[in-house]
Image 1 (cartoon, rainbow, N blue to C red):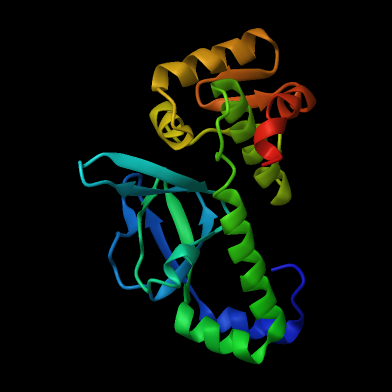
Image 2 (cartoon, helix red, strand yellow):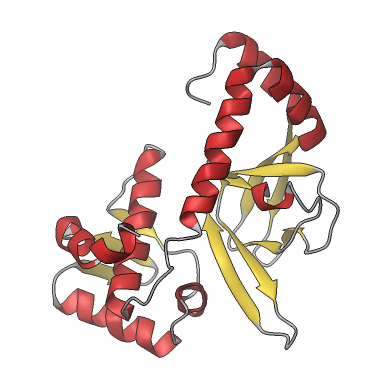
Length: 216
C-alpha cells in the first residue's frame, strides 16, 4: 500500500479479511453474485471468465499477487464474471461498503481507487484493434513482465500459471497459433521456455514487436 500514511494504513488494516486458500478451479465468486467485496491476490493467480449464451468460456483477464479483482462489479452491483483460481491462491477480501465509507473520509484512498479503476479500463484496451498473433502474444508477455516487475519480482523470468488454451482464449487466437508463435519466439531467441517457466531473453525486441498493441 505504497503512498499511504499511517492513518490510512491503520484503517485499511481493519477492513482486511484473509480468505483462502482456493485450490485450482475453485471460484472466489460467480457471475451474478451480489457485489459486496473486492479481492486482492496475496499469492497464486486468478483468471476471470464469462460464459456466453452458447456456453463458450471467454477469458477476460489474469490477476497476479497485489492486483485487485472485482472493480468491474461496482456499477452493476453484481459480479459480471467468474473469478477462478489457477493455482493454490490466497486473497485479501475488502468489504466494499466499508471501503467506500473510508474513501469518503480519506481522499488519498479515494484517489487510489480511481487510479485502479482507470488502470482497469486501460488494460481492457490492450488487445483492441486488428493486430497480428505475434504482436498480441509479444504484448501479453511484455505486459505480464511489467506487472511482475512492478511488484518487485522478476520481470523477465516468471511462471505462466495459465494453460496455453487460456492464453489463446484471452488473446482471441487459436491454441495452435499460440504454440506456433511461442516456438517462433524461441527460435528467434526472444524467449526461453521450460514447461510453464518462461524467460524473456530480449525484452527490448519483444517490446518492439508489441509496440503497435502497447501504444493503443
